[in-house]
Image 1 (cartoon, rainbow, N blue to C red):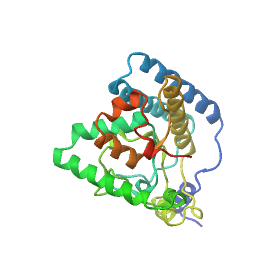
Image 2 (cartoon, rainbow, N blue to C red):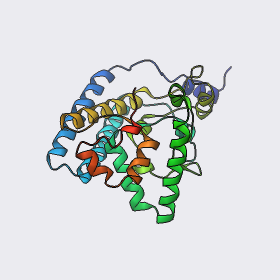
Image 3 (cartoon, rainbow, N blue to C red):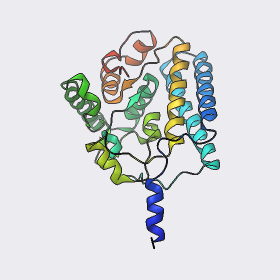
Length: 250
């Protein structure tokens, strides 16, 4: 007879990764709609770097509430995600300019001048390494995020929605996924992954509706720009394609 612990672990590994739970589609559409409207209303108060950062902050609040509400009716499996576990930090991260500017602001406020300069240099090195790869290999490069230092994220409290959506009930599967992404399935809690994605899409729609770029950018490259290009936030708000070198086409 199989032991209880083994059964629990097996169930965790079998957490649905390709089934949309009942009620999720309606929750997704509502989350996207609510975020789009909230982003538009927030930007009506002023088009400044601070209001753009506020858009990103409020999106996180909305997304996390949507996830918690769904968990109440359909609890997730036990997550394997722990401090110091960083397999997912070697995947490409997409983020809006609002999220990038929020992370850059956090780094400027929390890092010493020496650590901030070291971060700029690390971002530049990793971004250059990624750009040297053929375009069709960049998504599978498995380079560490430029914010990863000693297995911890420098900007964890303000991490983008893409990062917040990723979850797993089996860290070993995450490790295997890095080596063979097309052969290994990461067992995740689908509602968290999808709700974060829909809120992200709502933010993009709200930015576009407000006359700003709702593009997605590769996080390391976009942060490099935000931390090194003078007045990057103001130039983006003025319509300049300042983050274009980091733009993702998917």
